[in-house]
Length: 104
Image 1 (cartoon, rainbow, N blue to C red):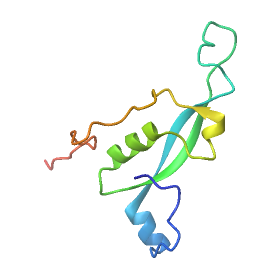
Image 2: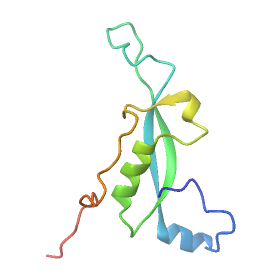
Image 3: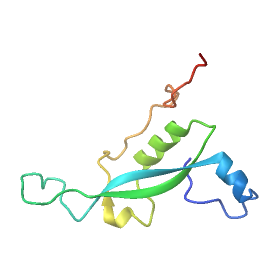
């Protein structure tokens, strides 16, 4: 699960939080430009960053994708749009999206 900031009552110090969580920006399109305004009328879609924190050592890529699919934060929700259809989700029990690294 992606987090906006440490949970209330979180007992991590700042250095622990920085070591355990990774700041990631999710991007959505600003909703002031219609999605179908691609016919050269001058309406270029604008990307808006929605920063979240994901756990570094627990499937970070899967957390980012799941958070992106779940949509923008409540603050950005009214002014951005997602292109994921309602009901989109990662397959339960699917393979990890986090790349594996092998030592050489």
